[in-house]
Length: 403
Image (cartoon, rainbow, N blue to C red; front, side, top):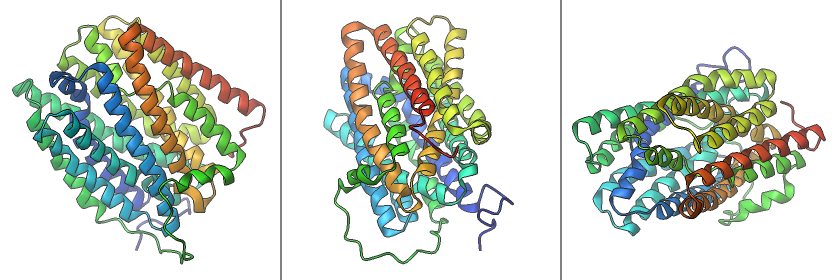
């Protein structure tokens, strides 16, 4: 029996929401033990900046296309939990793979396997969160989940920092250790249960790209919102470039990880309060404000110098993430029909990850040919233009949402 009644207002954070948040918390401890050292590790085994961009972009594209297919499959089957379980399992198993070999193709395989697990679980997981609440509380629920997820993302680098203090430059064992919290997350998924499965019509298994047909039946507000979000994604390259930006300015590995921890702590601390604020002031306004903050961070990163300036920018970056990542999902689930929730999320996530592949590759090329300052300015300008477009669309009534 559920410990919390659904949609009664007596408690917003249900048992399922809490369990999913714990799963994300432990998974991100493992994942983020690796993420801040990943670009340095890749450079140490011979990856160029362009190749790092291509790797990150390709891995995210794999995750994105999978999010589309498995989100559609989740809606067709009426199930959420099996996708959550298998996705987290696959990502956990991928972590020690990075320690086995250092050839280019093996690293691509390991990184892609990790991202495939993310693709399998993400749309179903977010649809599960949406199913557990009401439109009026979406910002709070997604904010709570992002807070737990990001708290794990702060603890992970702390553990990595402690490890590197005693074993500087020895990255391979770290990939094996990161498997342990991932395994805990997998065990927690065994406590999750789907709500009573509604009887489904005899749907044939959807084709791998059948989720793309959602664009024909999606409501206009969804198309306008997602169009803006995808435009922004073209300018939002991997966070690895922010870390490489610190390295270029002479920041040590330890300090670089420290900044990344600080960013995640800020994100974790403000995600839930920002979610509450977004429910009160409007999800859409919060999203636009977050894009403006992103523009400030990236534009500033091109010229920043000094420890406190970097600290300020990474603090703002945490606020940006809190104001956009959960909020954009809340908006999408509010706009889409209940029976299409995972498909709507998957459609956006799929195209977003393809655009991320392009963004990371282009960012690497701009950096290589014109320098880091040019890359950061282009990203900041693109975010500001996207915010202006979304504000214009909202003002003209082309995007009409409840919140």
